[in-house]
Image (tube, rainbow, N blue to C red; front, side, top):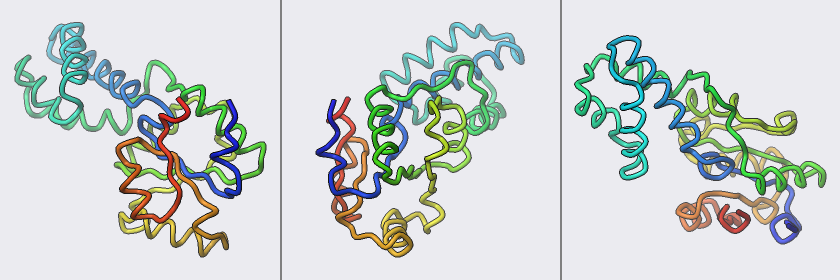
Length: 201
């Protein structure tokens, strides 16, 4: 696949993370697995049933509120919610997180073309950093510059403004790869070209 139309006349390419570089559920389902194993050890609750329940809940309702629903289903004490939340930040996953193959190819071409490769993370920094550590980067990590939105007062726009000042580039020199539901918001707010990851998957 040719990426010329995305990279032509661009100097900096920014990526968001979840469901852009890799499937977010690959991380969350492994966190749920580890939590289920912890509950089996701590409270002798059937781990397989917890995993099955959480997987179905995630597919049907998403991650928001999943602990409360699981705790209600299995009578899990409120005190374990802290363990559940901490797992998101420090879990050591059984399996490496794999980049979408198309995104891996795109990022490799960016490196070959000597363009800047940036990662802009908008979530909880501890959790986002934990994800980064467990992605199989195939050698790209040495070229990747990581930025957290919280460093810029939770403003992606402030990040872009500082980037322009530091690098001496214009808005037209920057593009962003992000999730489809974020395209309109980011294009308008940041004033840069953005395209949805679904165009290349």
